[in-house]
Length: 299
Image: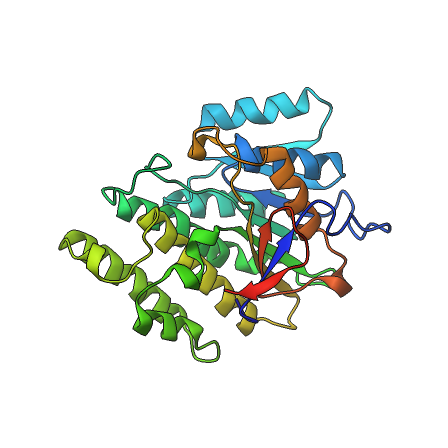
């Protein structure tokens, strides 16, 4: 992202602050949280005393997930949210502004993939781009007026993937555009995803230098990483931190339950990142959850 570096993290890389800057007045939203990493994020943040809003596309599953945590004695809220649907985003934002004063933490976790681990179909490319890239982007735009932007810094943590790193992109022209940190714009990023969808529709996507693995998912995360970089650059020093976090190969429904890490492991690292003290909170970083800590390499 902004520094063109990724940071590899483990649960031993850093711990929760000894002095907590947050309280029950600190409000966090987690998308796609009825199961997996999102659910684990909500659980951990609620355990730490934040006010957390669990959201889910499927209303019944979302309510069931929220009730299961409330039965553990945790305090949280639930509201339906489908990030692929702008009307759902607007309705959620209206509900939020009517019930809360400001937003401190937004975890954009909701995402889809229609491939098994060893498949690479782009049949649902438009749906993947809509959910994984435009979903977080539109939600951020709608919620923007609610960001607290105080001394504690509003935190946006976009759950991403190493599949979306620039090293996976084989189209040199597009890669150079994304590497131009000073001039990269949202319009260019939207042009990139539109070009990909066009390549899918005309059947040329395999020869255009797009990522080879989980191509539609990788492009959606490539765009999300780039958008995060632009936001971090534009609002650096203005009370907003924007970072990306790849939890690594995690045991979720998206991976068919396969993976090196549990959803709880992934969320533990992600929550610690989201709760870094304001004076140590970076912006414009891509963090990779893994075993070797504090290793840096080019994105």
